[in-house]
Length: 553
Ligand code: GLC
Image 1: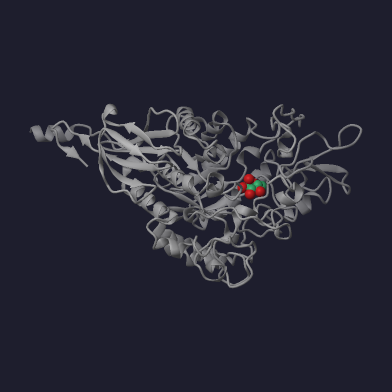
Image 2 (image 1 turned 45 degrees about the horizontal axis):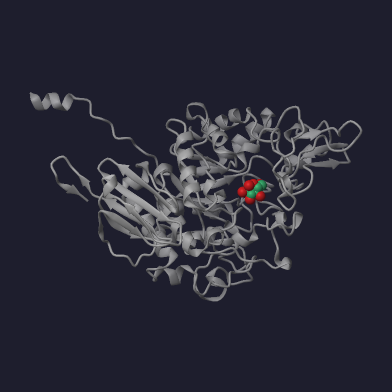
């Protein structure tokens, strides 16, 4: 009877987590991952041939930058057809195989969705610009010249110069937040919204597991097109786009209704994810979770890309971010992407090992950029080899993104095993040492560190989904505990060049070292003072006293 009663007691329900909460996202820049046909540019077949590696590495999802037909003015972020594959990357059959192979390897596939603008070669824009009364005129953002002539307002293009292009045929300007070959779509037009939601449906039906939505905070602009105010902090020599604050051209309140439409659609399919590319301060970023989490699942958190690289700033960022998250909003951290200098170049190769431990032990979905796991660095590009339009339109300020987009380094063979042909961007000179094949067999390599960190993370719910408890530290030391029920890990990262100690018994801890970024450190038991070498990161499994006095490991 007693047993029956006990059974009838409501059991506390274990929280459940979906794949994109537990998982690790890996960005593949398709031009540079693997070339299968010798044209020097990566392709879908090449990517498929590397799935065994991705499975071995232990990532859970591939986010693939755009693979759609495009004049490639912005390397695929100028889409000329949203529901087809650029022949450079393969065919729709190859794509369907890609979906099958991804899933056969127990990996998810996330596509890049570029809704803010199309290519000027998209048939919609060709129609739109053909006359003022064309039915698709309003699918883009057209405006009369300012009274007295000239562009309608002072808005700037992210890629340099003004954001308005005059079209003599119809005597109006169109708006382009990026290149003039990337006219902005008008998300205030209901037909355009329907057409774009149909694009999402098309790929969802083909089996993709979600989308990374390009420049999501840009989709809606001020309906009165008011001038943007000057940025008082801008200084000569900085990115000219930053001269103005993007007050009226981005992050408008009405954008959230658009995001909700996308989310509702994605939710009609099982287990899909919506990720937003959003560069905004934290308090505005978290608005994109939406009211009652009706927005994107993952508003990309880029703070590690932009942070000053020191323990105090990063501790502050973690605390502020955790505090800003809405109830139930799942955190995430991004360490690299195709738009930013690579981590090994930003902070140097030793600190990049610390960064790997940070990324893979923080609370929230980690996103890593292809090649960062082997320690690839930015490659200096000679002027004659420059591809990126940003470097061409705003030269000499170090804004170009080719350095971080160079081909993946697979082996020490010719062209790093990336292509049989002439690679579209130069291969890093360090490829004979920095490559997957060499690093897989080297226990001290960056790749070995990543693979161990990923394996530990995948096995330990404390690291995958546990809470994060900051540990008070000063100076160059950053520390926190990740805990899930009885299981807990202490992370201690020494950003400085002098040894540090952390008195862990004083905090009630004892434990055993699971992993060091130095790697040649034994699995010592630690109590009392934890000694952390210069620029070392330590992951320590905490031994928890149970009530019965047993020590759980
Ligand atoms: C996003 C992309 C970037 C692209 C821009 C315009 O920021 O990540 O590569 O140039 O949007 O589409």
